[in-house]
Length: 384
Image 1 (cartoon, rainbow, N blue to C red):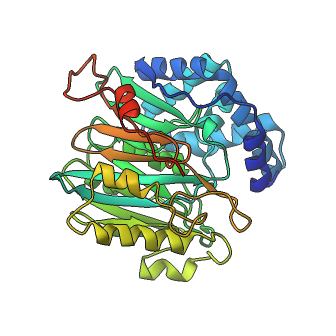
Image 2 (cartoon, rainbow, N blue to C red):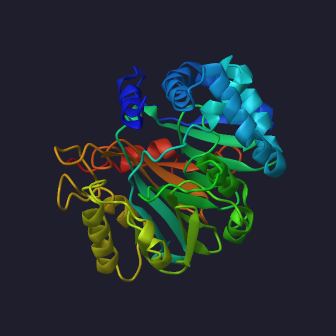
Image 3 (cartoon, one colour):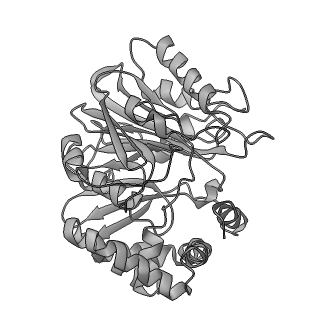
């Protein structure tokens, strides 16, 4: 099954609309995984089966053999660097009543680029000490796949994710004040073996700082892609990965936007974007224009408004399907790294409200302001 067929299967899968509430999983890593697996067992299976069929076709193996191959290839990396994450996968396996190798595949199945996205790193103009990481999520898949999940581990480490069923990592915010935005880069395939993108994402979510992320990825090769990574101190970097090489740029204390073109000069020769993304240059230019118009700094409000922007519609920041582009914006988030809150919209930002989710629930850490439900009612999105 080709990637385009896999995405069509995802679109056609009959899943309920994404809930507005937070799925809150608390306990040991195994217990968090078990609760995750039990709560979303049907959705995990619905997403796993077409992907496992595609993987088996690629490897020319039976499905069980392909799952075992993926475990043999990547389990050792997790065991060496993050063994507790394997406990979580075992929990997903038990909760969803899946064989462990199948749960492992479900957890790591972001093995190919499926998102376009427009990512922004900046500081809040109302409080320059509050760094913000944000992005749209552009895809050919349905927004109904998204779930807002909060993992509260007994170790004391928590994270809120805009996640897919069964995944161990995706964009979000942690109790360490670390977040990342991700975007696809179209480039030549790395020639040497690489670690899965899910490993990079979980490494970021486990890290205490941007510096710790850079130290952790040193020496590893990953699939093509890019990330804006930041921590609550304001240390933010752009990491580009193309053809097995890496470009890192410090983007701290400034407004910085990244679409789907490679910006690192030494990686440009690997770029293969021609015909891959009709809206890429328009989204980049329009977000840069908005940053320039807000030269004294962005804010949560201005970022949310930017993600609703329809300049050059339908190839706009808030991206809609068209004859020239079958990708669309299916979600967006703004992470407040110092405030430990993430603002999430599921669906087109122009019609979907941003809800505010604290990394630690209000019942455990009282805070001023409204709950995420109250915020969504008081700050509705503007209509198209």
